[in-house]
Every structure is written in C-alpha cells, then in structure tokens.
Length: 377
Image (cartoon, rainbow, N blue to C red; front, side, top):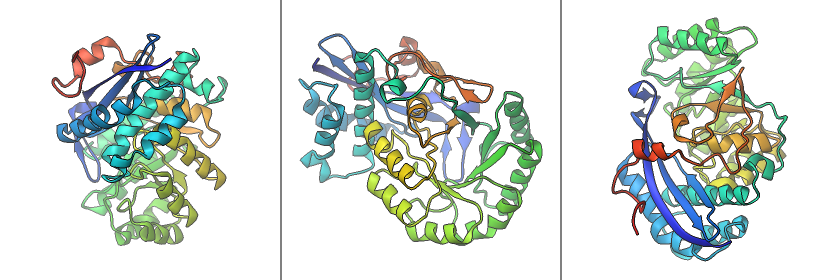
C-alpha cells in the first residue's frame, strides 16, 4: 500500500447554543482542519485537529500539511506510522519554525489519518488494533452544560438533566471577574448533584497563583475533584506552588504540546490528572508516549477532547491509564460513527478505523470554501 494523494479542508461547526464562553475565550464555531490521505488500494485515512475556527490559523495549519508534510508522504507505506512520525517530527525545515503550535497541530492531523488508515487496513477499530477490550467501561463526564455564559438556572437545569441521563460527573467553567460568582455557581451545582457524583471546575488559565489560592478553600469545601488549568499554561513554578498548597488536585494538558512538556510537569508533581490531547500533541503517536509516561507516574489520563471525542474514545478504551472521558457533542453530526454515551458510559465503537470518517453531508454543511486543497485536481 502506498500514499498517492493528500487533500485538506476545514470544517467550521456551530457550538452549543450559538456560542460559549470560558474564563479566557468566546467561541461561536469549532474549527476542524482535516486531512485525507489516499492510497493506491482505495483506502482513505482521515485525520484532523481542533481550533477556534479562525481562518488565518486554519489556513496556516493546512498549508503546513499541503506544502511540507504532504510531499514527504507521497509514495510511502501509510502502515509504517511510527517511522513516518519520526521522519515528520525531525523534518529539518519545520524544526526551525517551531516544534509546537501550528506545525504540531498539522502533524497531529496527519498522524491521526495514518493511524486511521492502519486500522482500516487491518479491518479493525483503532481501540482493538491498540490492544483494547470490548468489555471496557469508559465513564463519561459532561462539560457542555457548564459554560461560563450560562445562567445559574441553566447550569442547575443541565446538571439535573445529565444526572437523569445516568452521568455521575460534570465539569463547569470558572474564571469570572468576581470570584464569589464562581463560588456561588460551584455551590449550586454541588447541591444539585447526588452525594456520589463528582464535580470538576476549569479556569482555562484565567487566574494568577494568588487568585487560585484564594478560591482554593471553597473548592475543598465543595469536594471538587479537580481544578483544571488554574493559571497560565506554561507557568511550571506556579503550578508547583499550587500543587503544594492546595487541597484540590490539578488537571492540565490541553495547552501542552510535547512529551517533554508533560515530563517536566510530572517530574515535579505539578499535575495530578493528565489531560493529553492527540490533536494538540503530534497525534496519536505522541499521545501514547505521554499516556505511558503518566502511567509510569501512576497518574490518571483524562484526555482533553479537542477531537470532540472521536479519536480519544478509541485511545481511552485502549490505554490502561484512562477510565474517564469528557463529553462535548458539537461535532456528533459530522461522523459516520459518532461517539455516543449510554447510561453515563461511552458506547464502544465498532467500525474499522479511528472514528474519523466523515459523513458526506458534513462537508456540504460545514466546509469553508476555498480553504485547503479539497476539490483541486
């Protein structure tokens, strides 16, 4: 099997309620720069990454694929995923313009497409190719009802709805200008939850160390399971201070782009829940390295879902460090086999591949015209 053609495009998919807010961002659409890798045997592998649907950055990601990674792949056997990952990771020109960020996101989309192809060539779902079991019970937690712009009434209503659907864990956003508004929201959601349900909170990097320490007693009071991204993502000393002084464990990882970055946080005890993201790291290949590293430190891996659950569902079923996965359903209508939750647990996928195969109407509905190479001869 050999790679014959690379095509790229981007989808901009509306988010829940027409728009959402967290402690740092306002988002109306989720961007998904896609790559499809064609082969001489007719199999097609599909990969993508996730953005805030900014056309400039989306174009930049696809340009890296079209003009740098793509030409390196033509003629190669796509099943040799790890060898290809190493070749792309150490491509001379790209090392000089960045080993994270846009080049990494582009690499992630390519790597996911290659793993999708490898699983399709084996006629197996990716989780099985990676050694997972169909008997795995992967618990879901919901984030989509907890955005910062939602009213307190909507927050409580959504919490009750998730509990009625069988969930036992929810996450809400914090990072309001008024800390006591966050405290009030946490208290209301905790009161709406059964005693055995878990509550997580996510500041998206909005606070300083002092602000995180100020809210810390309230988090402990409400038995919050984790505080996610409390401060600026790269502030390693700040996270060490919080880990030493706060009762509530720290979760982070969606803004860490490399195995080396995760190593640094794990080595000094600055993270307790590892939220590695295969579309922010350089794909599934690097995600698995991070998950193995976290497992060696006996830390749970709870993937961040920049992939909107499709890829990480397979990975979380397969990797022993995972038992919990986030649910944000923005892109469910895009995929042939969308991630699904029943009674608070994810349904194990059955189709061959990584869960990334798109419905034809998804491209018709959400593709941004004249971006990428899709449709060119």
